[in-house]
Image (tube, rainbow, N blue to C red):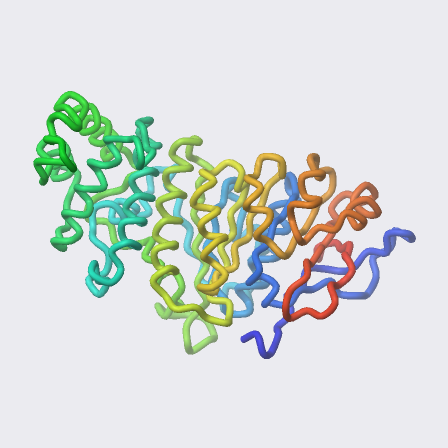
Length: 396
């Protein structure tokens, strides 16, 4: 895939001095996404840019997984009912805010694929359980630090015990396991001393309430967030490609409050992380993950996607209107940046994000017209000379 270096069309270049749209095409190589990207844009421009980028990636037969905080990404209206796009791309939307479950229940209740070995990959599975426990306890408003939270230790022990046995559990099972744990001691302590019955009852009641809500889903949900399935072409019929239409999965979290949004997204991201860490590294782009308003999500899962994604062939695109709200570690891991009109807090980009050059921002960002963008591509091993920043406008 990288050998043919397909180009992604962003729009037309703008002559800043003359304020004229030129005939020169502003584009990117698909491989640029393997170094991750940050989009610093606001308002409707953010949605328009996201639709252009992800639409172009999908037309190169690379699947996309999208966290949509505004309900505006890859909708039929946004893609202008483009016949070619919908012939080649299968878009599936999940809207947990409307009561539509996206099957995150299975991430907690069902053990991972039986081909995963506890003997060989136990540490990785324990990391995965720890990530799920943090997400669940954060949503419940309970202590979640694995080093200090007794609730975390208890839940992790329950999930490991069930998963090792290949046991699929339901909410009632988990409530019973919390009240009557499958182990009698934790280290040198009797279970009732380590975490008293009253504390376990509080946890069980909190979980039971969450399990009955729409955000958590139901025990019989299909594995909607199975990462392998999200990357496979849609062969259900239709389209012009005999291999199947490229799959785009949009998780529309615009209807969720901040707690449920973080819980839902963190759970999906944990599933993606487990899959990519179990796979061997690849030199090509397997998938692009787009995270709108990344500063509104729990930082740790996003940081982990950036840390592990490149080797697994995942290009992570984080979007924000407020770069000062991003954890600096996120910015240091991206090699492609696109800046929109009228965004504050640009000082944090200089010296933190390799994609943005101080001189380019000083010379061009203050004069950026509305509905235009500044494209900056950072240095890399396979690019002998870093391209000059480009100002462009999206296609009409």
